[in-house]
Amino acid sequence: MAITIKSEREISLMREAGKILAEVHDKLAEIIAPGITTLDIDRKGAEFIHKAKCAPSFLNYEGYPASICVSVNDEVVHGIPTDKRRLEEGDIVSLDAGVIYKGYHSDAARTHAVGTISDEDAKLIEVTKQSFFEGIRMALPGNHLHDISSAVQKYAEGHGFSVVRDLVGHGIGSHLHEEPQIPNYKPVGRGPKLRPGMTLAIEPMVNAGDWKVWILEDDWTVVTRDGMNSAHYENTILITDGEPEILSLY
Ligand code: MF3
Ligand code: CO
Image 1 (cartoon, rainbow, N blue to C red):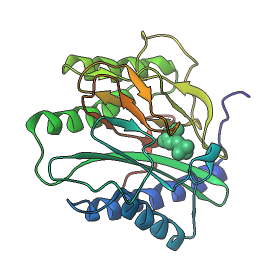
Image 2: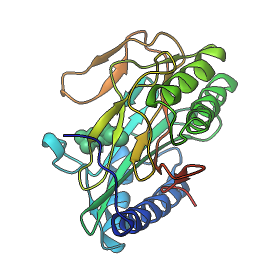
Image 3: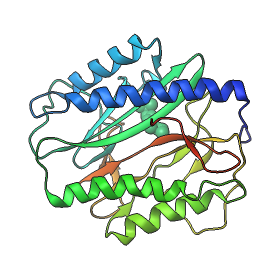
């Protein structure tokens, strides 16, 4: 399947899906505190999503058993919420969520501090977020997809971190995962040309140490091989005639 160009109607539905997801993330940010379990986050997330008359897109996606991916410290992405895991002061926690509104998807992730965290972890969270913004500066019509990838990589590595290579961002629309795949590393000038109407989920996953990862026995949780921490930041964006529009952020 080729990269789809969304119609005005599709774009307005995705705008709504994005806005609702931005609200879900804001509400989840408020409950992050030492003592809550990762399952508490999933329950709240599902509740907010249903209240907004949306469906959580991750639930049952290829068998994923929850609505929100909750990944703590060295967990990179796809952590499975459980009442056995309580957040502790000093942890960092990545929340990844997706909603479907009238058949259209949005997908976004944030990494939060739990109480007071180390300066190194604060820097990791900030650099990961900023690497997304560096990436989307390149999200202009006529540019190549890997111009985004390259900008993300350059920024993250320039700050002494590494980008995960086994996982990628993606096109998004009536499906959670559409073409193209969007790596967070690559030389500039390659990949498909960006065109107005493309909707993309750009999602840097940045490790404090080495980029290599493992998947745990649960077949979902991705963790760093070296045990160092990892952060994730993602938004659903629209390529326009000019500057990109971030759909999952106010
Ligand atoms: N944001 C992730 C992605 O884009 C989450 C999906 S994993 C799921 O691939 F299985 F939980 F849905
Ligand atoms: Co995604």
